[in-house]
Amino acid sequence: MTETHATTQYPPGRYGRRREPQPRRRWLVACLAALALVAAGAIVWRLFQQYGPQEYEPQVQRFYDVTDDGISVDFVVRKDADTEATCRVRARSASGEEVGLAEVDVPKGAEPVVSYRLATSDRPVTVEVPACGPLRSR
Image (cartoon, rainbow, N blue to C red; front, side, top):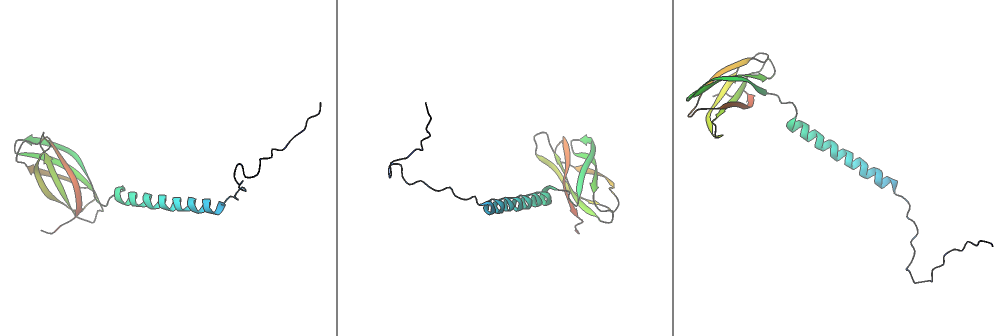
């Protein structure tokens, strides 16, 4: 028995027109990849500027001497040694309500520890230093 290899012939017009294979467009893939890299780089740069190291970075060391009308806090501000800063100090009650707020000046020096007594309108349970910036003249 002999084997014959037959080629499949489709009746003309029955299955539509067969398309020829398209050549690959490597330049299009390369351009899209480059565009994606540029977009990712722009996003990374924007996020770094927004959430990266800040010029003034406060950190609460401890709070103590909690009474119904005040709280004491020690905090450090990471900044250039030859600059002064103003920091906002805020106390909150057990319900989360803000019960005390003050702006505290931080002197020149490499990471000085600032001690401050914040007056409050109710008993505080915590204190925070949410923001610092350049010294504001009052």
